[in-house]
Amino acid sequence: MKLSANLLQRQTQSLVMTARLRQSIQLLQMTHFEVNQFIAQEVDQNPLLEFPYNDDEAGGEAEDDRYAHQPEDAGSDDGYDNRAEALSSDWYDNGGSASTSRLNDEIDANYTNVFPDDGAPQRLDAPELVSEWKSMPGSGEGADYDIDDFVAGQASLRDHLAQQIPFVLPDMADRLIAQNFVDQLDDCGYLQADIVEAGERLGTSLAQAERVLATLQSLDPPGVFARSLAECLAIQLRQKDRYDPAMQALVENLELLARRDFATLKRLCGVDEEDLLDMLGEIRQLNPKPGSCFEAGVSEAIMPDVVVRAASDGSWLVELNPDTLPRVLVNQSYFSRVSKTKDAEVRAFLSNCLQTANWLTRSLEQRANTIMKVASEIVRQQDAFLLHGVDHLRPMNLKTVAEAIEMSESTVSRVTSNKYMLTPRGLFELKYFFTVSISAVAGGDSHSAEAVRHKIRALILQESPEAVLSDDDIIDMLKRGGVDLARRTVAKYREGMNIPSSFTRRREKRALAKVAGF
Image (tube, rainbow, N blue to C red; front, side, top):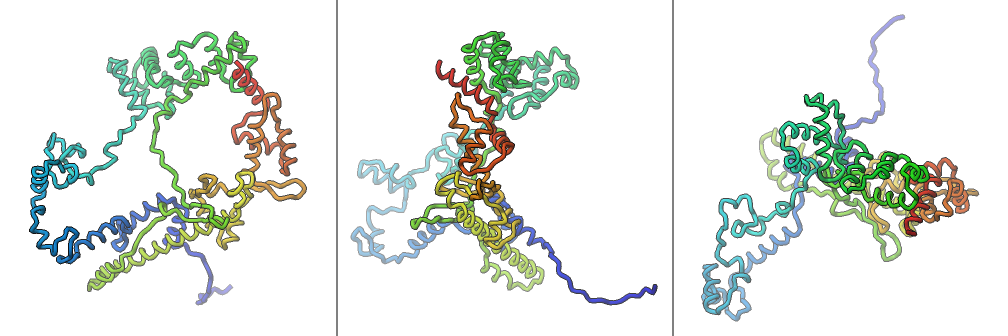
């Protein structure tokens, strides 16, 4: 076989993911907070990008300019013919504070509170603390106040415990062991450590480690440093002096309480039904997570990206939230001035910055338009939900919306990620409106899985202690409502909503009914 080299020309098509295309795709699935951070980074790197000015500030500057260019010979309302005559008045004085003092003496009145800017400067109470206390009289004007300086810091669980440990453990060796235990607490206040291993690692005896742990378990909040739920409840009951043998038997058999096996609990605790119900009431008042009152991080409020309101003609008005809409401007005048330089390297840098700035503005505009298209289509298809509630939520998938707005499913998926819509029914994530379709009886309209879960929850909430619905009863009631659902699906939905079985609910509802009757 003879081998030879040939020159061939071939034309092929390929999809190339450029860096800017990847960034545009990433912008679609970013939250408004992440987009603002990305824009802030671009503004720091690109001299042609800038944030828009505040309208209030611009208005204030315009107003100042209007008064600054006022003609000098303009007449006044005081009856003077010109400005020179007004300045010659006895009431006018360039002295500022002297003018106020003279008015106070002649009219026998105090105008300091009316004209605070004309008053004499306030004396500093403590000049050495001016840098630390901005609110001190005389330290500055109101514009320098920062409201964050007056917010009290929130103490963490470890800080709260560190303030108590020196009062209960005077020995330094015990404090070192206590600090090791504090470092191994989780967010709920439970100790995630083995006492034996901790003693060996710290070079102390098991008795000393247990003694320190027992002392730490007496600190506030009650139940902290527990190693299990039973121990946490036992610590709180001991501090209330309610840890008797009957209560101890109840705490040691929490798995029976979870199964609502009240008959076995009465036998193990040696109490009657009335005493058992009182004990259960005391258990309900305890805190199973003593460290939960100390937040580990800062919670952020969810800002809606889209706002839906009812229009006057009966339709729905879909708008982008202006508070979450990113804004950035391209300074074309600055580019035109600086680009006249003869330095080729500077011109190339500015040209690259202009291309990046134009790409960013187009990408942000495309992101806003895409979110608007997807949200408008969701509102159009879920009109019954906005009018009547969850029962009328229609089944919908990404393909349905993508075909309606002529976009790809991946684009719709990115747009609906971490985006929220404020509706008259509440605040919902855009992913909430995409649910699985469940077939209907006799070939009717299909139902949404979220609507079916809502119906199951409503049926269980309406049941009485004497007539608790089983999964088969729920299936029959759903079929009468036009929903064809299998028994395993009903059990899966019920367990997903943390609803126990009918046997457990019957025990619990009967116990609660007896408590209400006492």
